[in-house]
Each structure stands twice: as structure tokens, then as C-alpha cells.
Image 1: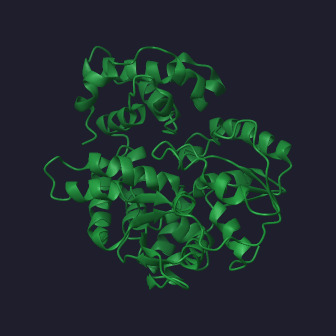
Image 2: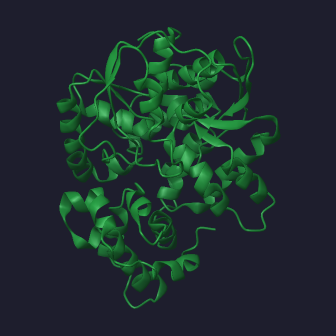
Image 3: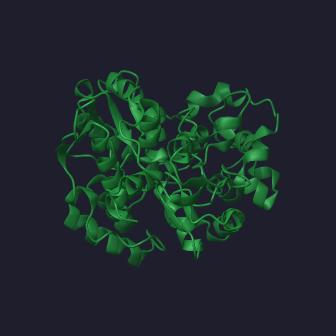
Length: 400
């Protein structure tokens, strides 16, 4: 359980090494020490655990100005899970218990996404009331209207995988999902898309709404038959992080689904990472593109996911990878953070846009749908897409 009381001891393991200072996008932008992870932890300890300070408006602002990018967690020499402590603190102060109209919209968008008609109405309503302000329009046809059930492998079957379809792919970028299915089946993998999938839960844990997140975790665990598949594939690094690192922690230790959550953690793969590790049964003839790679922040759950697109696409004839000056620098989107902290997010994004333009690459690849949207909104000439789409284009199964 992501309860603050469970982190009291580990908070005190912070060695004040300052590694988090060098990797925090918010600190690098505003240079305020209060926004460095070590100081956030100290404040949480004083306010919510030791109770020596009040829950002030400034304290709430400091909690809110964290992107939950996990960069501090990934670089922490003491292995302090800073992101989880921030989430637990937000839950403690009641940040994320949405009610009324906004609660209804979020419920429809995240918990009942399979009801496509309701989802479309909820998405339209969300934009009107500001829940989804500045988000891209919903796709004319969601991914679950294109593919469902079991899609057979093309040619000789190498194995069977399940596909977890994130909300970004299902409703905003179904082209990613189409490419995932086309490339996996092209390489001999039968793809099972379980019915009844809902949001992975990462938007609501960012708000501190752990109860809603547990509902989503429970729903998703019940629809996957893990014994019948070799792996569970996701195209989103944030969904992958949630399923591998957070599902189990959101359940009680004695929850009957705890064993299944841990089994799922051992089978979850990001699609390009899976293909890179298993190898392509058919190498595309060529990929005549120059591309650069925005590495998503939520990459730490797999030691190989950050390099998989480089290795998978970079070896194709005609492909040219043009590395960014700082490939792993945050773009400032962070789920809905860019809507809540617009000025800060745009300032963080500006550095990333400069580096992308300096690369002079035709295409930007990234595995995060929110990064894809937010970078696209700031660029005028480069296309931003998922790396598996480029692979599908190289095969000729998806048109550029």
C-alpha cells in the first residue's frame, strides 16, 4: 500500500548527495531549493509524519510542483522512492479526491473507457469544463473499434502475447496500436487483446486518489490470463512503469490478486524492448528517415527500454539517428501537469524544443503519448510519433 507511514524509515535514508538536484526538471527551471527532492522529503516528514509544521498553502504548492517524472528516484544513491512518497503525501492531504462533475468525467474517461459512446461524451465535456483543456481531440475511431480479441500471427507463429492498450493509444493515437499489432503479428506473435481493460491508473495516483487507482488495478488484473501468454506488451512507458512497479504496491499484502500482480510485473514489456530482445524474424528493407529520440522520463522500470528504439531502428538501412544534446531531458508534460502548471511546463518544454530543432531530424520518436502530444504542440516542422510506427512504415504495413 502506498501509505505514508510505510515510508517513514526510508525517508531518513536520504544522504543529501544532491544527485536529485542535477536531475529535477522543476529545480533546473526555477532554482528553488524547496523543489529539490531532498527538501520535499524533509517537508513531508515535518508536516505529515512528525506534525511539527502545519499543512500550509505553500506546502501544497511544493507538493503540486512535482512532475512525478521519477528522475530523482532513478538517480538516488540511497534508492529512496521519492515519487511514491510524493504520491502518498498527496493522498494524505486529500489532493486527488475528485467529486461532482469533474469526478464524473474522470470516472467515465478512466474507469469505463470501453463504453465508447460515453467516453466520447465525457471527453467533450472534459474539454468544456477544463479537465482536458488543451488536450488533443479524440481520434475519430478508437483503437478498440479497429482491433479486438485475438489477432493471429503472420507466417510461422513464434509465441503468444497479450496487449495492454493504454488510454493514450486507445483514444488519442490509435495509429500506435495498429502499428503494434501489425509489427508483432508480422514477426510471428499472436496478439491477444483482453476485453474489459481500463486505465492503468497513473493519472489518478498522480492526484493522490489511491482508491480509484486500486479499482483500476483490480479491474485490469482480472482480465489478463497470464498463463496463456509469454508476455504482456504495452506501447507506453508510463503504463509499463505503473504495471511493473505500482500495481502490487496499491494492493494490500493479503489481497488475493497480489500474486497475480507480481506475476504480471515479471511479464510486462514495452513493445520495442520486447522486439529488440526477441529479435525480428523479418528485417525491414529500409527506413529512409532521419530521426531523433526523446527518451521518456518513465523509463527506469526496465534497464533496456531506453535503448531499444535506438537499437531496433538505428540498424535499419537508410535510418539515421541524430541524438539530442540531452536525450533524457523532461519535456514538461507529465500527464496533466502541463495543464495545471502551464507556465512552468512551457518553460521546461522550451529547452527540449530547442534541442529537437537543433538536431535537424525529420522525425521525433518517443514511447509516451503525452510527450508525443506536448512536443507536437510546440513544434512546427518535425513530426512526433511512436518508434513502432516507424518500424511499421519500414515494413510497408502502415503508410507514412
